[in-house]
Image (cartoon, rainbow, N blue to C red):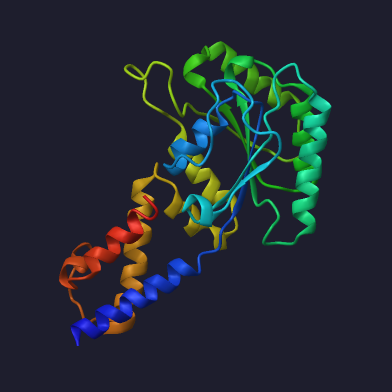
Length: 269
């Protein structure tokens, strides 16, 4: 009986993993602002190229779940260099957002991470144009001030004030992040866990689980999600009250559930 129930639980959790809804997240910003390092740090896999400040993509690049083995679809913006053709970058971004919206709910962009180098200390005109477009299209967005370990607090504060002075009709979250600190021995990555939590908050509920499973910075959220689904599957098989033990002991009591917990909590890693 235990073996039969265990197989049923495994089936239910497999169905849950197979039916996850994948959100579409676009990561937009200049070449060299740390977009690739940010993606790699949050999701734990080398799904984006890093180029030490040089352009590594010419158009929006798609990283789908079947290619990068995480239940999230990511789009990385083309590698526009500082001082390059800003209007071409803006037009490509407008066209990309419009094309995705026309494809329908499953293909449209559900959230944008807009990345600006913290050391720049000011927001560019092309940034304002793109953020206004995002605002008009009602796409949830997070403005990420990247590489904050390489900027002074004065530079960071100046950039924040410059963004706030624009008075976008939609209020954006502005987060200070360092995904890959230059001085690794004295500075740890920071801001990533808050970024993940804000991402989960801004996405529709049907996409939240996929982000929790895909990311590697907020481990507690992954554990809570794993236990919740294991508990639901277990109680569905054994019946409420059939196991008078704490939830923390559930996997051990049901033998094979330890494996399932491990599979969910370390999904794709």
